[in-house]
Image (cartoon, rainbow, N blue to C red):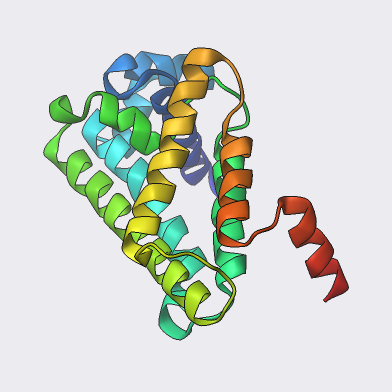
Amino acid sequence: MNERTDTRGKIVSRATELLKERGYNGFSYNDISGPLGVRNAAIHYHFGSKAELCTELVEQYRELLRSQTSQFMASGGSATEQIEGYFRFCMHECPDCSSLCPLGALAVDFERAPDAVKERAKLLIEETHAWLTRVFEVGKAQGEMSFQTEPSLMAHMLMSTVQGSRTLQRISGHTRLEAVIEGWRAQIFGTTAADNSADTAAA
């Protein structure tokens, strides 16, 4: 990795942190350049505007989603592995009660966000929903999951409860996401994380 690529990555990483903590309108290039020890001109070299920077940020999440789910979407596989991967990602993105996910942060200032950022955010939501819908469809068809609600609505409810728990825990200061995930495991699998780990070890 050359210096320019490394600087670009650091800029996006810092912008992601700030977005999750403050929302789209809560930070400027100065909040990025200072901690990184670079000039604002260095940021402008890679990203001509804040809108371009945040568009790139959301695109990286879209690319991550595609890289982790494309094989499953094309040819199927274990729905359990897919949903557990989603749970792990959510926990990794929310290690404490101080930040929102990027989509939740963008929602705060969504009407004032640039059109390019809005478009990418909507695409990320649609693609995540399509993937989770497919996970629930396959999971039920293969006997991995048990539920009565339509898969599309299950996907919407999962995304909404995860997002809602992160918002509420930021206010309350109490970690709720893990409990919400355990509740979902019990609902669709009838198991907990400990049960799933034991099953995996036995297999």
